[in-house]
Length: 214
Length: 407
Image (cartoon, rainbow over the protein chains, first blue to last red):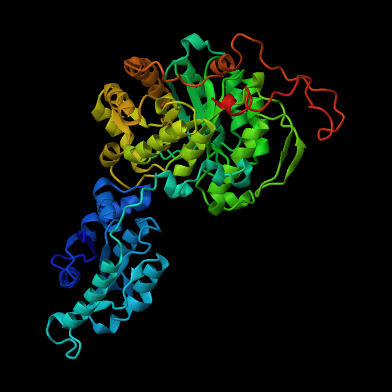
């Protein structure tokens, strides 16, 4: 079994951030769940704060500066993706959405995704399902059923006593691990391979339709 | 008409997007009339300083003025002797290919063959519906419309039916191309592999904008184009016809160049208020500095893209005043291009073609023989049932007017 690669996108703005803490727990639990199935996995973490200026520049110029391009490639070529964003004004943060906006719209198609979010209060917890999950549905990513929300109280031991954060993290991680293990190892499609844009074995005549008799 | 024995290996020139932009250092926005007459002067000066090509964009919305490139280019052709007039780009999506065929054949005749054109899709969404089109169909439009344009210049009588325009029955695009040689076509693209494929399929040129993005993006497109050029039987990859854009601003010493250009860069349309000048210059081929720095950077382009046929510079946008643009042309013609010509000629393989000219393409098609001179028969209005509307016998496809004629 080949080594799988999990990409983690953390949109927290402070350092250390609760967002990153949740992201790290989700990543560690996913690696452990994959190990339970005998699958080795590595983790690459992208802190969007480090790329905030580049993301804005990408929006303005249409291309990603080298460091951001490398981060994007890390994300879109992963076998599985963990995303964690703070909830700002009832939804994902603007920085998080801007990062999604500079990805190719097809880049996450079929990608197993575990969604995490954090905020000051558990009153925001449904934001995962009404705001973030539709974003990944639009991108045709395959978000696992469990989304993991952490409120400030979850870190202070006054959170949910019946389903504590750790249990929610483990459930989400197991679902992501299962999705990653079930999926063939990611093969980066080359957009400049004629088979990619023409279709396997086809020629320009097929783009012309009947015009070239093909 | 340029003498083919002295035709340059690499054609150097400038291209303009035709923006009318406020000069950020003075707050003055030139009028359309001022920018139009300035552009004609810039083109004339490009020839005076020894450049080979002037290429003009096409836009249909303010703050751009160039809605009718062939009008402008024909006027410039009348005031110049050797300059090749081209476009950057002609919109193959929103223009009717029939009108492109007619307009550019006219320009070809009036300029004595000193023209070619670069096709592009246009990425301004609102423009498409003004012409009854939809930007989501941009690629199919570009592919279908060019198939028709290609045919209109090669077949005297065209029957045609496609998805995007009224069918044609027995249509003849007039005038027929000068000497029976269709204008040379470049296909321009920033990111779309299908356009590189299209250029390769027809044996046309491929032009990489090479301004807005890092060189690596264009390297992949050009490598694909060269590979597919060979796939479609036009010759070895290094015989494909490649053009590159570029962007420079020069002063005697580099600090002055940076200081002078920075306000224009910072406020420029497209990339202004984004990355710093320094970052953008590092990431893209933009070079702001001394003429020697420009020489060093652009002498290295062949290492990235292979030996190529045309190098165009953007030097007149973002509100730069006419006087400054003319000075930039003096730098280009006086110091930069003569050195680049020598640099790029060094170790250039014999198999690599020179930049395309009408004279060279006439010679390739006819040798020393007479060229086609299209003389219409008397009009009977029976294009569909009668013989070919021209007095000479129709030339079979696959000869000078088939795909081979595009080379």
